[in-house]
Length: 384
Ligand SMILES: Cc1cc2nc3c(=O)[nH]c(=O)nc-3n(C[C@H](O)[C@H](O)[C@H](O)COP(=O)(O)OP(=O)(O)OC[C@H]3O[C@@H](n4cnc5c(N)ncnc54)[C@H](O)[C@@H]3O)c2cc1C
Image (tube, rainbow, N blue to C red):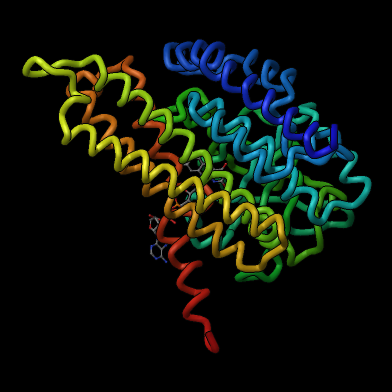
């Protein structure tokens, strides 16, 4: 058997295994999370032991080495599950890229490989109460010898409560814009930090999100990734394109789940003596959903393949795929909830959770407005 055939067989059996997990234990985890409002610690261990947290990382780093566009097919299946479960898998399979871009060999051993193996958890820590879309970071550091002293605030940070490191973006005190930004691996146990949980989210229930306040928190200069001035490059550089494409695929997966629930419901629910699926209006609505989902999947996979091929246009394509996929998800979940009738608005109907979970994706890796700004910049650039 050729290597390609072996690889294809391996991925096919991995996909089957993941689908069985999502529909079996994954659903049990979803019910537990919704009931308790917390992600059971066993879920992280389970996902880690199954190897799902290191699917996309290279084998040389201890990952499973699944090519990016094939990984997306697996992420699509994972995203049919509870948003907290897909958040763990999505973040762990991607954040190593941000750390790795500028890592020294020592930093690769200390941070990248342990993150991939699941020995350490890293939270991406960019957003501030007064700086979100603009990325106009206000948290600042002053350097004294081999130590930076960090002061400032962050909020909405996924896994920011229960992590080992914050991959945190700040600036040298007194600088503005991109100049003077730094990317730092800040230890969760460092002194001078106040950590507050922000548990009352609409969807993605159970995932911890942190509000952080730093007051002269010491961070070794050795924990800086890249040079001074490269902080925003770590945050928004080579990492962002695959991450946006990944979020687009999580929309496809969740939309697929919404459509499945709508079809199942429409088959069994009868009104005026006939099942809903027998009504053309309902069947057409489901047909629109199916078309919408497939179109988003294909644009997402196209963006992924262009990125794999090293095409510089893949950055714009990543924004297009994300913008298109979140809008698709909004339309699909809305129609899927409508097909359920009033009972779909009540807990614990699965469509109710899917509808709530879907809303978060519009903020991840940049809002629609930011994607539109990126896309329009590309075709409005002088000389095009
Ligand atoms: C569930 C969830 C998890 C998150 N996890 C993380 C995390 O792990 N790490 C992290 O750093 N952040 C995280 N965030 C924060 C997220 O990245 C921000 O919410 C997002 O970047 C938007 O920033 P903001 O909330 O400050 O909105 P703002 O920047 O205040 O924007 C408000 C609205 O105005 C629009 N807008 C802003 N500027 C413009 C403009 N120039 N033109 C037109 N419209 C504009 C925006 O699109 C938005 O709709 C998370 C958010 C959510 C909801």
